Length: 158
Image (cartoon, rainbow, N blue to C red; front, top):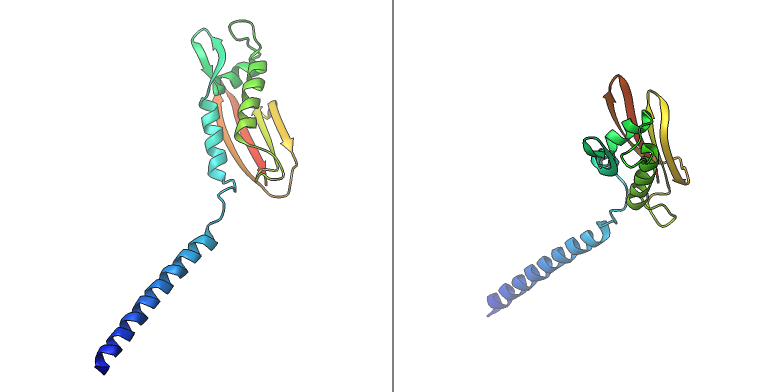
């Protein structure tokens, strides 16, 4: 009779220990889950790469052109079919893209940004909004065409 009671107590202790471990694991997950709001470098690089491949509203003789081609057209001061300035289309399209992708504000992880497009170290176009802080993440993408070195860079201030 005494042995049966000891077996029941050991079983109860094992159940309590298992439940305690499960509760500790659950609390650990709840405490360690942080909001994934911090911006990572790879996100900036991906944004730049994908924005260069974005098809714009500007058309040349071959059809609608990518943002990368539009940067080149703007540097060469070419016009889109329809008479629009390639630089105006670049400014409008890239401005909208940046504003929709990177929300700036005190409640946002992004406190400000600075986006620049350069050709042979001369500024083609630039955007900035918000506050520049000491903490920032950045990304850059370069390409060359007809002997001209183009670069796009984005700094996100956190």
